[in-house]
Length: 346
Image (cartoon, rainbow, N blue to C red; front, side, top):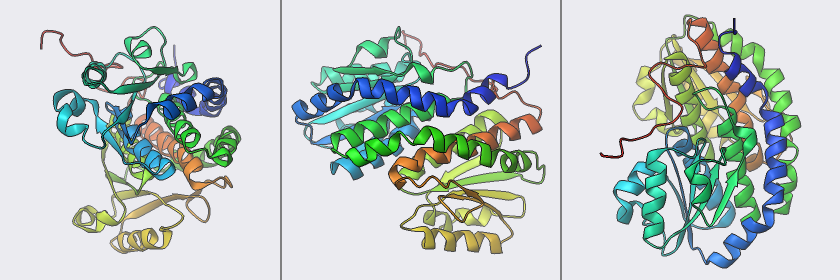
């Protein structure tokens, strides 16, 4: 009889190997990525997806804007599809980067069709070559290593996010960051091994009644994704917030039954830690994840924009362990399907 959550456990644990395979795929397409950007004359970037990949779009837009020095936005595909003139108002000639694990999500396909009908160029990132999205773009990158059997995305999300960071670094001409990306698989293995025990302890703690995941900049989209994993896998009350914004009302929810997961930055760490100190004084429990000197230390030695992917495995493990402790199957979240397809007649 299959072990409960076996697929999700494997997909979380196998991410370092998936990243290595994905980097090899991306290197094979590096010249095409550069050509796309060099010849397109783009003055802005749009990233889109649904569910997890919408949160990926938020994080990727922050990375793209910082590295490429262009305006960038992350949007749900439904907003591009249903309100293209307003949603796409980021520049005169944006490049749309559409992200989908399955390559078959209805809103994403419709958003791409609307954008292309308006004369826009499209780059697609997906994991399945035989699905519609993989043929729509001016350039289509298919990351086979991100394929999954589980419904809740873990390995797919991180491999697709890695591709977005790679693309932005390539477009920005940042050879230093491109080289650093190749250290991620080894760093990811260390993070997975080092965070497993604490994630299991916290996940099994029945006194934790609600969770908040905090992050700023590119980490905000990742915080949204980890909060979603807690909802999907463990049916937990979980919400994401920008770190300092949490002071402005949401902190009233913090009690001794609250766990606050904080994805700390380097540049603004002092301000972020001050927020956590306030929440701790209210009785809240804190799980700080940072490069060093934290409850979960990444210890990667990598540039901040490269190591951001390393925040994902500890949060994924926490969601997985909490699901098991609550008698749920992480492979099959309640009421969810792997692909959302809309009725064609709607």
